[in-house]
Amino acid sequence: MTHGAAVYERIVLKLSGEVLAGSSGFGIDPDRAEDIAFKVKQVYDLGVQIAIIIGAGNLWRGQQGVERGMEQSTADHMGMIGTVMNGLALQDALERLGVETRVQTAIEMNKVAEPYIRLRAIRHMEKGRIVIIAGGTGNPYFTTDTAAALRAMEVNANIVIKATKVNGVYSADPKKDPTAVRYARLTYQQVLDQRLGVMDLTAFTLCQENQMPIMVVNFFEAGHLLSAVTGNDSVGTVISADE
Image (tube, rainbow, N blue to C red; front, side, top):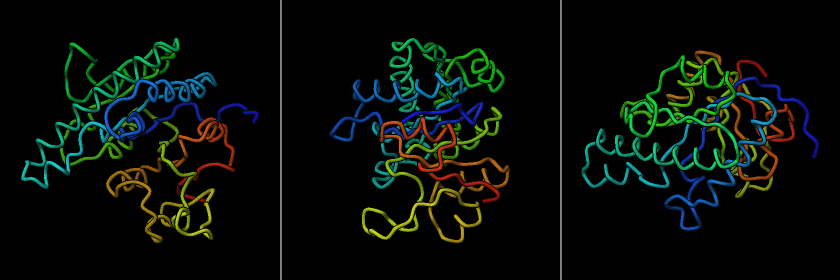
């Protein structure tokens, strides 16, 4: 498959922590980190400026703690610290491919990562560095989806790309319904009306109110992310104010 020029100058890529997990679904698998880094570098090599927001579901599921009586704030802070571990693993994999990378975190831990500073993150990207922004929003009760939406607005990204295991947004679950149709484009209102569950509602509303486009794309299929950032409508789904 040939790829043209990128249609986005600056993207925020939202990755779940699970993308780093091995076959057990838990922990950090160095082979998976290398695979992610390779796919990200393909996009980077097109000249796209990239900020990555990563979750921590491979290391800690806060809900499990809450269900056992843990304070939500404590559970969420543990998850935020987990995102820093994932960020460092991904930074290492990218640096070994020759891509200069910085980890910034909303929870300050100056020995291992820079504090998240909006203008510094933008400057890094302008200088050709990938920025991994960890620590969520720095506040409990907010997901890393919301962190991705917030950071996309702050760094003036062109789009938030949510990396998933499916090729975009479908009319029904494609694994259960063979008649499910993939949407190439949707409006925010269509997503809400059809309850398509693209992101958590706080994140989605933030994007809608600030007219930040969202793309849902299969990160695991070879070439899909690369095709999506070059404007190929045959992969993924773009959600924006108008069709």
